[in-house]
Structure formats: structure tokens, C-alpha cells
Image (tube, rainbow, N blue to C red; front, side, top):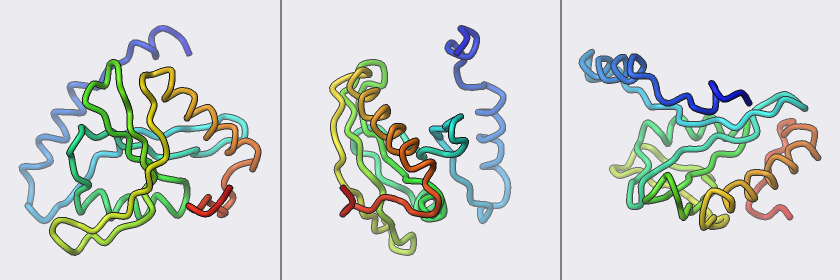
Length: 146
């Protein structure tokens, strides 16, 4: 990855667009697609990640989106209070019902990375599994897989 891409931060114009979208009709729901891990070989989506501050809940719009995403690739919630240093608690999203308020969500604890190095070790393992399987190919891991 070149330095330009490494130093790229969120776009002010994108943030403005998302904020202004909230001024449209109140029934125009949206959610922010946070972060997607992508593989070049084999090409495809390794996982969908959503970073949440400690104590943040999954919203109904996120449940709707995660339920769709999980048919294609695993979905993980990464929780942390300090995105610069960690620690990071990683949970796998196993499904949810968006209708109750708040929504019912099934999360499975995966691991905790004490810092970015620990998070990288987890991601490397996930990418290795994706590569070993030559993509998910419609056969996603379940909580009972080895």
C-alpha cells in the first residue's frame, strides 16, 4: 500500500453528504457501511467489519444490512474505546431481528486484541482461512466450525 492510501482519512464531503441525507424524508433509512476486508487472491470479500465504541448497540438498520451481508461473508463487530491503541473486542454477528426496539442481536465473542498488533494477528488468521477455502463460496463458517 502506498503512503497516499495509508494516510487517507475520512472524506469531509462524504460526511457532509451522509449528514444531509438525514434531512430527507424520515422514512429514507440508511446505514453506514463501515469497513470491508477484501482479498486480491482469491478476489472477494473476506469480512465486513463495523467498529463500535464500547457500549454502542447495533441499530435496526445495521441488523437489516448485516443480515444481508452475512449471506456473502462473515460480519464482525469490533468494539473499542480507543481506536488508536486498543484493546479491541471482536465479536461475530450471527444474526438478528430488527423489529424489536432495541433489536435482538446474536453476537459471539471471538477474541480480544490488546492493540493493533493483536488485531492484525486475528485478521491474518481470517484472511488465511479465506485463502485456504479459496473464498467463502457460499459455505460460511458457523460458530460450530473448527
